[in-house]
Image (cartoon, rainbow, N blue to C red; front, side, top):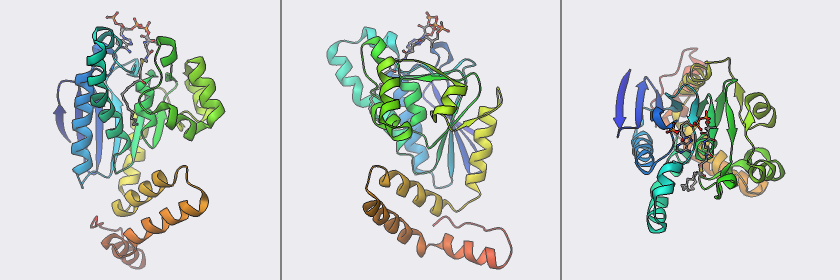
Length: 264
Ligand SMILES: CCCCCCCCCCCCC[C@H](O)CC(=O)SCCNC(=O)CCNC(=O)[C@H](O)C(C)(C)COP(=O)(O)OP(=O)(O)OC[C@H]1O[C@@H](n2cnc3c(N)ncnc32)[C@H](O)[C@@H]1OP(=O)(O)O
């Protein structure tokens, strides 16, 4: 296990082919300040370049919160001009998580609100424990979901449900969140991180070339009509059809052994 810090508020722990992106600003319940946004962006840039990382788990060191969203204390102190300068900094953090080339799994316990839930929505899978409380309460503080929520939430639960949640700004406890599809798995209390890491290790046992190509097809195909989506899949298929991973995967199956993925 290795650990690399990215600024004061974020760490990346690597164990084999799985990396953990740790939100570590517990005094502010991981509220995303400008500096924390820069830390997240730097960590995502490093992970995106690391061909040995096959899956990422987004976790929190705070006992009662995954992330409570944008730092409302910092926001209150920013001038309009500073706010405008802050946006691309903060935007890079959310985009960084969304565009990780390998599967990303959010391990959520406690509060995942506003930008905190948007970070989780930017992942591919959300694992929550029964203490999770999720929501996009931005309109209750005079803003809108600005970390992708107005686009990611309807793609996950449909336009009407997304509208109800965003307009009402209501917080949703874990059991209802799982029923509504706001989170994908409900782990035992305190087991969100362990279950997310177990899922990540399972993903990491598969072809990294295949998994990354499948993620790309899933993401690019969202919102397309079926015909255009099938063209996206065909293009993704062609990136793996002649890969070393495909050759190794087929050979390993026929030789009844575990594959040793070349990763290219
Ligand atoms: C995917 C690609 C997309 C590209 C798009 C571009 C993105 C651009 C970037 C924009 C990012 C926007 C992000 C988002 O959309 C906007 C927001 O997130 S707005 C904030 C939303 N969050 C909230 O409304 C939650 C606010 N907090 C609470 O409701 C409560 O604190 C709580 C979490 C329910 C906990 O309540 P309690 O247990 O009672 O505890 P306290 O309230 O006393 O809080 C303890 C302590 O923490 C401080 N704190 C809590 N939340 C925040 C916060 N958000 N910011 C700063 N500080 C916070 C709170 O003040 C207390 O501090 P103390 O008083 O003890 O000093």
